[in-house]
Length: 328
Image (tube, rainbow, N blue to C red; front, side):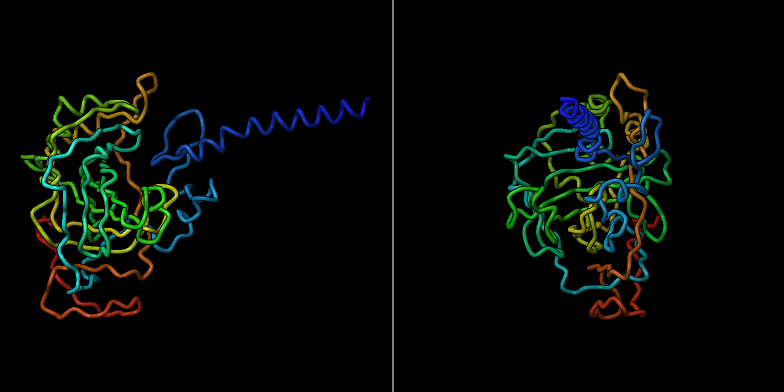
């Protein structure tokens, strides 16, 4: 009988230990990660730890095709086979929900309003899943990608999935080239982009001040977000949040999207916490740049020299001047 109680005590102790371990595992799968250090009473992994705290996220640490990257314009290759990007919203305006996720300002379109992109480096049509805003606490930082080492105040990322081959976003994210991300740098100006103006006007942005806040937006014309250019830069990379899956085709437009200084300040006043917690600005929500590792960065911007193949070991590459809109 004494032995029976010993076994019971051991099993009970193991059950307690196992139960106590569950929240940590659950946290990992619920998005237990952060962009920056913060006093929250417990450790939350920042980018340098993403690949170390969860084996499912190991690509964040050991991947060879990670994003974002620093785009050196002198190393880019002109690809004459890159066609213009095609946006198809069915001729309709869209509705969707704007969220404060605690990490991003996120806009998710209504599933009944399908928005697709095709062309460029894409062999299929991709469906818009989400739009995310990255932005900095200062004007000299905020974009995830850099251009010749220069950061921009922010970056808009339109995340699409290959709905021709996959039923949903989570399935597409695990497959090669399942995701297409159209990215645009944010630049401060006197007047704002028409689409962003609807999202960031005071009457709207104050509705999502705290984590988990949401607000419905209707009657949006997505074409108004895109800058007036058919030129872009493209490369193969990864998602920039855990698990950093290397399944993304990046398309970076060669002209910025404009935002006013007041709207940028409104973004910096958004909290990554709930009202009951200490205020922590959502700003600086960008992953540091990753090694390019001999990947080819292609463009459809023509220049004087004829385009050619893009092998990874070619040292001499044709040069061109990037659109002056970006470098001003």
